[in-house]
Length: 408
Length: 78
Image (cartoon, rainbow over all chains, first blue to last red; front, side, top):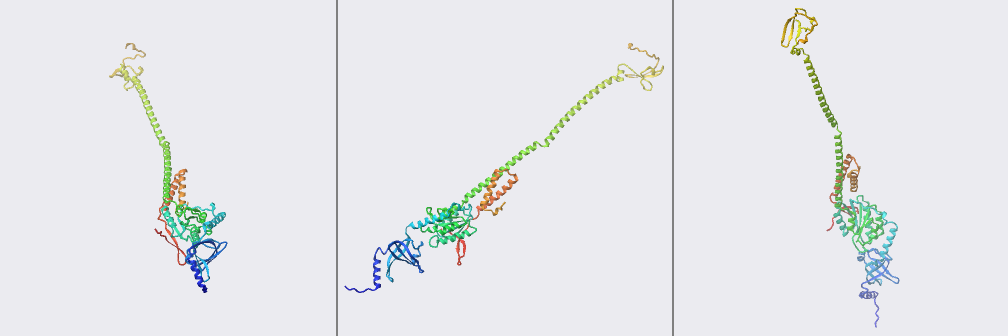
C-alpha cells in the first residue's frame, strides 16, 4: 500500500469535490443567529451563524447581497439558504449563502409589538393628537412609489370623485434599506409646502417584510411631528403597521385613502343647488310677506283716507242743500200764500171793487177824493166815479148828518 | 365682511348657510334681507365656480443633477 503524500491544495480540492457531490450540502437551509456580521466594501457580506453548540462561517456574494430587502445585524435569528463548500485558500468549509430571511415572523412581530407599546405609552396614538382632515382639500400630497399600483389607484379614485383637486407626488422608495429615510424625507418635504392640505403615505400590498418599513420608529415619529394631517394607506385591509396607528387617519387601502380624503363633487354640487333653492325660497317668502303687509297697510290707508271724509262731507253738503232748497221752497210758498191772501184781502179793499157793487167815489175837480160833505159847497161841481164811467154833478143841497141807507 | 374672492370653499358655504338660516328664521328688514340675499347669491356663484373649475393638475417631484427638487406633469401608465 503506497502512501504517496498529497499536496495541501489536492486535499482541499478533494474535500471540496466530496462536499459538492453531497446532495444535502449542495442545497440546504440553516437556521441560526447572526454574529460577526460585516459588509465588505466589495459588496460581499461576511458573517457567522451560530447556535448554542456551534458556529459556521458564512459568505454572501454581492450579486445576492444586492437583492436582500431586510436589515441584518448581529443577534438576528435567520434562516440562510445556500450550499456548503470549501474555501481552499484557508482550508475552511463555509456556507455560501444565496438568501437570508429572518427566522419566523416571531422576531419581527415581537419588535413590532414592543415598538407599538412604547409609542402608545408615549401618546403617539392618542386620539387627542389626531388632526382633522380638511373637508375641501385643494392640493393633496402623496408619498409613495411612483410606479406601484398604489399611486394609480389613488389618482383614479380622486379623479372620479373630486377631479378639481391638485395632486403632488413625492416618489419614495417603499421597501428596502433606504425606504425609511426616503419616506421621511417625502413627509417632511410635503409638510413644509404651504400649498399642501394633507398627505397620503403608503404603498400597495406586500409581504410582512415588504411592509415593514412602515413599522419603523423613525417614520412613526416623523408622522407624529407633522403639522399637516396624514392618512396612512399601507397594503391591504388586514395589514396594520405602526404608521397606521400614528397617522391621523388609517385607510385600509390606497383607494380607500383617496376616497376618505375627497368629497364627492357631484354631492357638493347637489348640496349647493339645494342651498340656492332655499336662498331663493327664503327671499321670495320675505318679499311675499312684505307685499301682503303692504297690501294690508294700503287698504287701511285707503280706509282711513281723507277722501272718504271729503265724500262724507260732500254728501252732507248735498243733504243740507236739499234741505235748504226744500226750506226755501216752503218759505216761498207760504209767503206766496200770504201774498195771495193779502191780495185777496186787498182786492176787497179796492175802491173799484166798491164800484162793482154800486158805490160811487166822489172827487173834486182836482181829483181829490171827497169823504165828507164839509168838503163840498152848494152849487159846487164835482165828479162821481162809477164802475163804468164818471158823472159830472152839481151840489143841489147839503143835509149834514142825514143818512138814508134803508132806502136802498 | 370678508371679501368673497379670498374665501375658502368651506368658509363660503358656511356663510351661505348662515345667511339662509337668517333669512328663514329672523325678522329682518326688507333692505337687510335684500342685501343678505345678494351676498348669498354671490357666495353661491363663487362656490359653483370653484366646483366647476378645470381639472386639477397632477405633478411629480423629481431631482435635478444638483439634487434640487422640481415638479413635472405626472402621466399615469395605463
